[in-house]
View 1 (cartoon, one colour):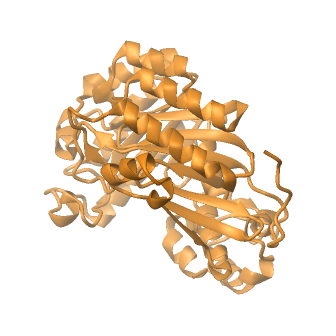
View 2 (cartoon, rainbow, N blue to C red):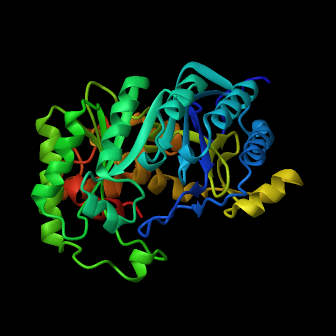
Length: 390
């Protein structure tokens, strides 16, 4: 399949391309989660879903022009509910369909509650190079309050096993939990650090609409000032250990940033396959967003019949691209080179000259004209910064 040259829509180059694969099942859905996930049933057919994913990818190929794929992220749900054999078949099929770069980063999300040594080893043999573990906390009481299916000992065992098998391991932590103190949050961060992991994602628990917690928040949710103190305790602990906060919720050491997520924040392209997956593809006619049917049953039915029925495509209005770019780029503490704005949106910087000037005046963005980078104040008041570009 021939490579397409830079599109004529004003983009000076095609951005890097990633692949996101959604596996929508969990052993148990957490009460705070608003992702497209469903409780795993005994009759869930892994083979049928893998077939659907590969059919989905095959039908997406005409839209990516044979471009190389730099990273893969298998998310969910809990992808680790699928067997190593299924993940092996999935990745073998992907390699047969796309030009996967030899040094591609391939991430799989895993829950410590589904941990088995042989399963982790099988994922590595299938080609997974980075495991992202949804730890959230090591405190049993906090894990119970969050509705997690694992306990602290299982979390520790999963990290130890992952570090012995995978070249890169990420641990997800959550803070501002019900009745959590700053010292308890600091202890969670210190425990994660004690294993020698080089990437930690730290998220503030939020009450998302249309979730059990959103409808009925659990007792003991910290007030705003306390939550900020807790956040600072976590951040300071990670920074003191030599980690760099390179994104709003992501910390890395020794240059171990998540390459897949960096591509999102730098407004790169990504194919999104699987139930409810989203994608972004640049072409000669502009930038197209894609969404897949959310319910696994509907998605599977379409992929077994007419795959186009599961996919909605719409072109992003040119006027919306500056905000979309800044929405992503301002999550990065180092920001992005200013030239990337025109490369990825087709607009000159003049399109955002006024909001840039105002953001600089308010101390929310770095005045260096060669960079689009939030200041520390801009990072703290990110929503205020982004509002300027609406």
